[in-house]
Amino acid sequence: MFEHLDLNALIAVYGYWVIFVGCLLEGETVLLLGGMAAHQGTLQWLHVIGWATLGGILGDHLLFWTGRYSGSRLLPKLKRHQSAIQRVERLIHRYPMTSVFAVRFLYGMRLVGPMVIGASGLAPWRFALINMLSAAIWATLFVSAGYWAGEALQHFFGDLRPYRLPIFIGVVALVSLAALVRYLRSRTKALHR
Image (cartoon, rainbow, N blue to C red; front, side):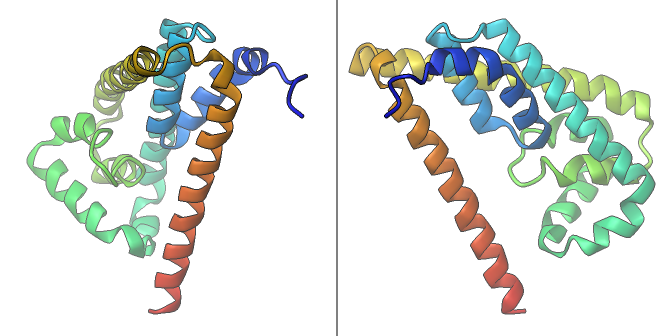
């Protein structure tokens, strides 16, 4: 069925765009997979880090400016995220510069964090400088982890190249299932309120 499908060519053509778009949103899973693709030689390690860094920077800047101009109206409407918003507000009041760096690495704060920071009135140039550094370190860590995971898998299971398509389909299925479960849980919570 998939014999004519050249997964290497698809990843080589669209892989960097997938990494960029994935890092605009959340990114960790995409970065791990990008690191594994770099280990297999399908993508270049430094290019994966570069595109991931760029996507992370742009995504956080969009959220920062959204918070800067619409935070006072938008943040109170994010009922599901109020505990994360309150944690980021406490963090930014105590450690403004550290919070810019840290929200990228704190679970559940990646999307609301930059909006809260934007609404806090932090100088845009300070946010930009620390956000660039944070994105570069974040991308390097997660891409490297994916690369090392690829190395470990190859060590334990041998050459994985013949199994790339089933692995790719399995990962897409798992990510889709996780997104569906998350959506259904949030919908159930909204119905019970």
